[in-house]
Length: 115
Picture 1: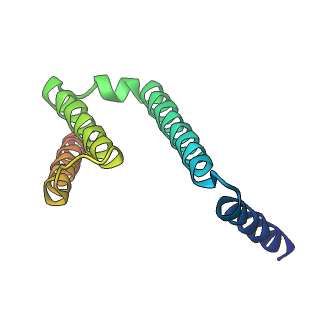
Picture 2: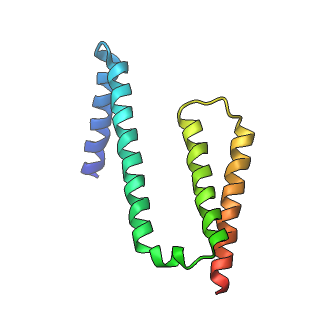
């Protein structure tokens, strides 16, 4: 319980600094950008680790299925990048693209399970 109170007080102190300190909004933008880079770096590391751990399974797929997985993953990255950088890509188009990419990955997974 004490740890929760400590964590909440730290967050409240940070929020107070953002509001009170002049230029706190710019500092908040910098911290947000740093955290975004850390998250993207972590995701890239995890993707590389997953690729190394499952390389035999990936190369065991048919060429068409492997290409479909790569295109679907690339499509997911493009949609998330469009969301992050404030593109004018419509929400409906984005969700439809994500649904297509997810459907392609599920199709490849089902084909992989048949063997």
